[in-house]
Image 1: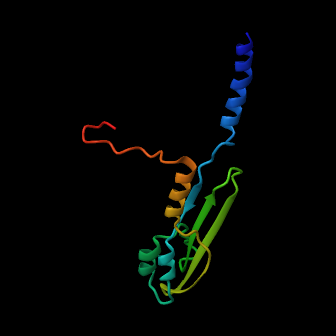
Image 2: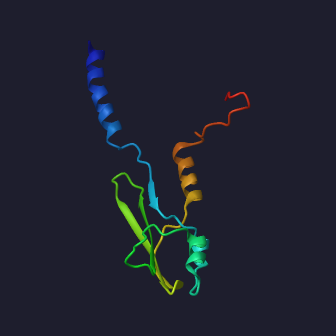
Image 3: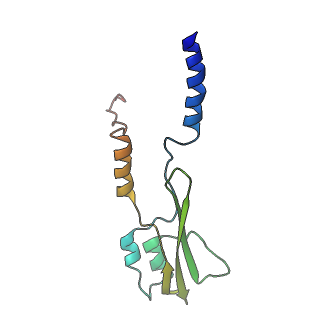
Length: 134
């Protein structure tokens, strides 16, 4: 009987802890993650096509401000769900880049992969051989 009571105590407690996100929350990045090298190549006089080739299409296409492109991104990395947002705004005149302001999240692929390795260790799936076995 004591083991059954212990089970009744441990089971709900473990379910509550596992369900509330105390253990781990996946970092979430949404929007435009741009490479720093691409943003560094921006200069006045570039056409919209050249800017789109460097940075990609803007995340916000405003029909009322066709001469302004907004690259917006959000990042949630902690357990509380705090969200940080950044916007890089580009201004054009006659389809030519004039100026830009704001901030952006540089692409963080290498940093994220290193953090994941430290958190989880070498848990990546092994490559399967030709016969489909591990």
